[in-house]
Amino acid sequence: MIRLLAKLAVATVVGSVLFSRPSLCQILPPQDRAERVAIIKGPELEFARDDLAIIRWTTTNPGGDDDHFAVIQYGTNPRDLSQTAKSHIRLNRGHSETLFRVRVDGLTPQTTYYFTVNSMGADGENDGVQSPVHHFTTPARGEQIVAYPQPN
Image (tube, rainbow, N blue to C red):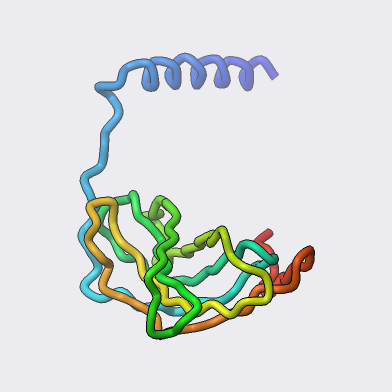
């Protein structure tokens, strides 16, 4: 027991020294961009209620800046997707895939919306992948749709 407490005390002191000196922390440069990014799952409706929807999709890891944005172009006409919704995410360099989710607010009940999805780095550079046009219909006022199981 005493040996365990001694190890814990040493680990605490070492940790406090390391994290109290910013010069010991390293900021990683951006990861190389992937040659080709592909949507490997979705896009699909995760959740919708009369005034909002959450769309999700998975791509191969795009690389580049850790700061990224999931982007949806949408509208009520499949030939006029002039509205945009986006959500900030951070890439996980250790994963080969990236899950994107976007919340789309201000929707009208019982209306069909058409959309495409893509992603971009914080520098505004598109990752080079865009989905075909998909659609969903918002439910009646006060109702909701859970179309995809919530992540655990």
